[in-house]
Length: 271
Image (cartoon, rainbow, N blue to C red; front, side, top):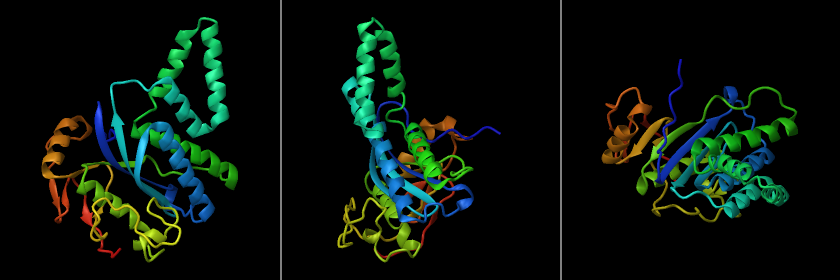
């Protein structure tokens, strides 16, 4: 059976996403703080390499969530920026060695080889699929090496939701922040160390886009579109080949917005 194509916006412009991935059989592989710290570090490095801007994340015991912004342009990523991103992912030494190698190739008239290598790197930029692949492969290698683990860590593909900006993006961010609160791990989102919103003493809620309390939020699903009715309809039509039909309805999700199929409201949780 063919896999459903990833729901993502193509072409130039700005898009927001909610991404999530679980462990195989939902095992609690990330229950140790040191493991979640490594997961967060790998996430940040992969985002810096991919050119993906993280708006929110949380690392739980058997899954993680990310809300991110992807900006795509028609302009190619310059060489200096490519090297900076390689350094963010693999370290300064690797980036310096790569720059030296490119210089050597140019010195013997192999500019085309350099151009091909750079194009391969550019193809990995500003794309959620490449970002998640880079992140999950990096963390997977570390986990298996450090934990002497064999077998599959991740349960299939990650899920993605294309989100409208503004209050809809804020809703997804609140949902992500409140995961450890709903799970009973902390009383306040800011007390959870492996979250974008975390503060050293838990005294602040961090950056909440619209300044409101984190109250009712959507149970975010995968392969969906979330936003105003007009946004959902527009995206369903634009990405019609990603669905079985272009006639996917924009369904109201309580009073927080509209989405394609399969959503419900999560339990209201005080901030």
